[in-house]
Image (cartoon, rainbow, N blue to C red; front, side):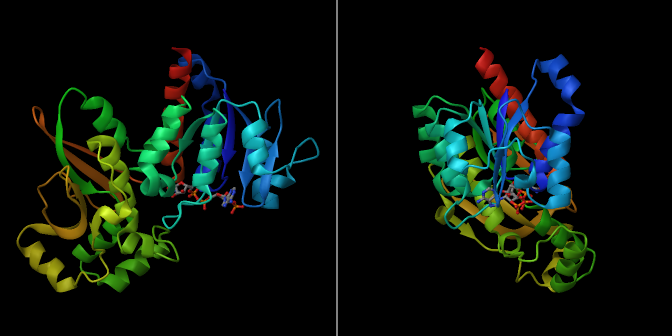
Amino acid sequence: LRLILLGFGVVGQSFVKLLLSHSTDLYNDYGIKPKVVACADHKGIVSCNPGLDLDRLLNVKKKKRSVIQYGSNTDTSGIFDVIENTDAEVVIELTPTNITNGEPGKTHIIAAMKSGKNVITVNKGPLALEFPSLMELAEYNRIAFKFSGTVGGGTPILEFAKRCLRGDRIISFEGILNGTTNYILSKMYEGLNFTQALRDASEKGYAEKDSTLDIDGYDAVAKLVIASNLVMNMKSTMSDVVRTGIRDVQPTRVMNERKKGNAIKLIASCDGKNLVVKPKPVSIKDPICVDGILNAVTFTCQHSGQQTIIGKGAGGMETASSILRDLIDIRNMIRS
Ligand SMILES: NC(=O)c1ccc[n+]([C@@H]2O[C@H](COP(=O)([O-])OP(=O)(O)OC[C@H]3O[C@@H](n4cnc5c(N)ncnc54)[C@H](OP(=O)(O)O)[C@@H]3O)[C@@H](O)[C@H]2O)c1
């Protein structure tokens, strides 16, 4: 399998480390011998037809800050030229999530699909904004489009719904889709106010400098849109979600609910018609009432009742494992 990596930050580098450490298992268990034939960061792209030396690629990125310093046997032509003209089966899109216009990920994904390459992404922006048209384009070009890490990071929330619950009818689902806000609300449950809890989350590296995406609920909205499209066949986009973030959650409300046996959680919910993200009380006995950076989603099914999946919603290695999962699926599809 020949791969093109677009984006070589936390997730991209973790994925390459995973390829290096799992190469024997991947070959023995799945018959996969992936080669990274091109890799881009925001400064440019390097490509090498026989495959890049992955240890060297990681070293160059660490020491020289950009993959374009990789060496003399590389081609630093434009990213779209490489997407279109490089012999590869899979483009893996790992640039930053942009929920305003989906770029640069959206254009990368479209270019890859149009050139007949399978696509894996963990970038939420393009899907949250244009899910139906991207699925249509993938189908039109007869390529596989996989994005299991966009919701839940390494925790296979989408796969759980689509594969494990197939045959049943999912009536609704709700849960915690953002680990940063869950960490903050967990700290508020322990007695911190919002500002203290946000500072603690930043110090631990769970909150970005600009934490608006998490705090105001946009990240959860993007994931809810992706899940509702895939799991409930809705044709929704970001503007269809009624959104309230956690900025105005008061310590008194958290403590009053705590006395009643509840915790305030940022809950994303979908009943097939309505999409809502808002902080609300959840019984501490409810399986979705998880602490810290965990994510948890309960699917309510017509026959099998309620099923809950819990796990870490982010992290470089965790998310990289979702890419490997998608890659194995693509390999199986190519084979069959
Ligand atoms: N980190 C997680 O736990 C996690 C979990 C789930 C999903 N995700 C999603 O995964 C994606 C990657 O996350 P990350 O944490 O790896 O982000 P990151 O560390 O910021 O890495 C982003 C990478 O994209 C590169 N890039 C930016 N603009 C580019 C452009 N125009 N062309 C080519 N490359 C470009 C950056 O280049 P430079 O290195 O030169 O800056 C960097 O290598 C995001 O969409 C994120 O939402 C992340």
